[in-house]
Length: 153
Image (cartoon, rainbow, N blue to C red; front, side, top):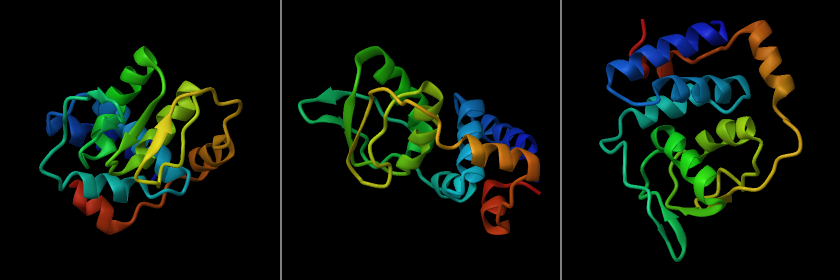
C-alpha cells in the first residue's frame, strides 16, 4: 500500500474516533512504518487503550505520562517542549511516536524505547530520509493483523 493512502485511511479512522490531531497521528504512524518501526502495529495496540489523554504537568522529575500512549500525547508533548524546553519523561508508553515529530522539528531525542528519556536539544541531520524515500517509492507492507485492528477493510 502506498504511504499516502495508508496515512489518509488511518487519519479518517482517527477522526471518526474523535481524536484531535488525527492527521499528525496518522502521519507519524506511517512515518514509523516506513522506517521499519511497525507504526501501524503500535497504533492498533494504542487504539485498544481506555485512556487517550492526560493533562501534561511538569514536576520536579519532569513529566509523568502515566502510561498513556504517546500515539495520542505526542502532538501536545511537542507543543509543551517547544514552549518550555527540554523535559525528562517517565512512565512512557509507545515512546517511538515521539521520534517522527522530533526529527521533523529537528530536535534531539533520548532513547525512545527506554521507559524514561529526555526530549529537546538540536538534531543536526535527518537519519531517516533514505528510509522514507524508499517507502514513498515502494510503498508499505502493513500486516493484516494490525490493519484489521485499525478497522480498515
